[in-house]
Length: 416
Ligand code: SF4
Image (cartoon, rainbow, N blue to C red; front, side):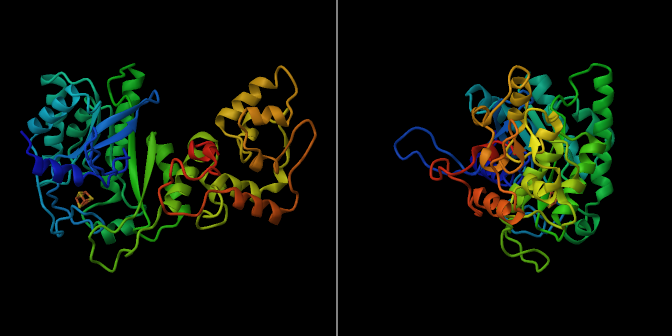
């Protein structure tokens, strides 16, 4: 059985992987019921939108690679531990039976070599499924460079797999993660996409039902937001990824002049996630999002920034504009656009109707007419100032649930 010391090391070492996020709170019960712990259990979202708790753990943090940005790198002096496949299985089953978790997020450092590590990961998921009869959610990290037979087999047991691209360019990989290469990371992603496609053609839903994802570290290297967004678009187009996760760089016990000494902050990560939503759900291309700039405007969400660059296309009449045009209006999100399209079939809409449909009029009013009426500002600098003022506070802190009544919840929910 995995002892508490190794369990702590292996869950603590897994916390920097954000492709299933949200562990990070640490609090003791002090006489009440229940503790939270900074590592170990995190939350993820299933295909049908349910939020589930996952045990987030590494099989081993004994890495033979030396990626400079990583706390588990070979040259870092940290406590090391490795679990056996059966120890992980027992832990998952015990936690599952006690209702602590609904699934597993299993990753590993490169222990001995890529094939050996992938064999252990595969053995763990096969045992869990076949020997222990575990039917819960499994997100498995694939080890780039491992034999394709191992990786393809793993795809038949995991719900989701991910290969972390880590850094946005080959140049940065060479500099900061010299044992990794873009080719070695992209090759298995391509193979997984193919495996997934064939399985769907054969109506086999057992292969990666939740698809594949990847993670990129933002700010450890010099790539611009433009390079990152273009790469994300290529990854979505070529490998049918479900998601690209962006992890803003946090110095983790690194002593090298090749890396920033201060954290990059959450605002850049937040803007990239907003841009990512525009790519995936709003029909924008990377070129449209970034325009002629190198980086996203930190003061404005990327949809507002795009609209300001294209004021000639506005205002649009909400009663007649096609759905794809409505989606491009700042303040009209996915849900409100469908509500508008549905409701306007029966009657002409006015501004009160839009408010009820949760259109964020503070932003949308500068870009729409409703029944021919326009209440926005026409001067570009004035619109920009008002939109900037309506934005969230420029902070690198995690937002509080309770302290800021002005926060626009539609932005937090992904409605742009
Ligand atoms: S391969 Fe690199 S990023 Fe992964 S655990 Fe090892 S040092 Fe860290």
